[in-house]
Length: 313
Image (cartoon, rainbow, N blue to C red; front, side):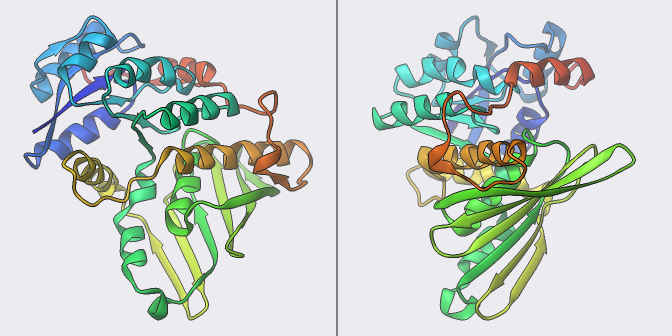
């Protein structure tokens, strides 16, 4: 049984992951550390609902008692702090999406990975069963990918990063530039469109949507035909947990490495830089640490203020 430690139960993900784990005998949350906005009553509710062993007083204590840490806090600027105690104890750490929100933290993660840290992540959409099914079709049968279109909706980054990771799951790493194409808006809500170039010669287009949840819809045009599907969001957590368990058990898996995970963040940073530059193409290589970033603390404050009780007994 894989012993999992939960750090900061801000979102619904710890509940969703735990419910998936309950359906099998591969992994369980065994401990929790929380110094975020969920109160003691909610932490106790999470412990009782999923039969955890204890609430830990420090990240170091949690890292010691588990096999892998799951960082769930919605302040992505705080993810490195939460991950380091696991890394220092030689434990793998899964960092929930968005893994980080600025270029400097991307570089820090890459440095840790080069030094041997095992950093997993981040969006369940990258590992969706529908994407796995498409990729299982031999290329000689499905054709080479020419262009991919994808949608996501709730907000620009916290949810928008899902579609960037899904595209990477389909096309692999190698995105080189991003260009903002425009915005449509109605009723105080808006959708933005971005064009991505890839080293393979293929390209991608993705739409984010702010103000309403939208499904993950994917269209893949190949040299032979067009594939179109909507990702079943009810199966996303299972797809991700399965891959993490495979990794922890030494079985074949499709988990992305840190370079791939941070490339998706660079895509989103290049997207916002292009928008700020009136749609000029921005290459991922030209991003600088003093360039655009996404404010995790501000998102955490807004999310916490808007979130009602989720885990209370």
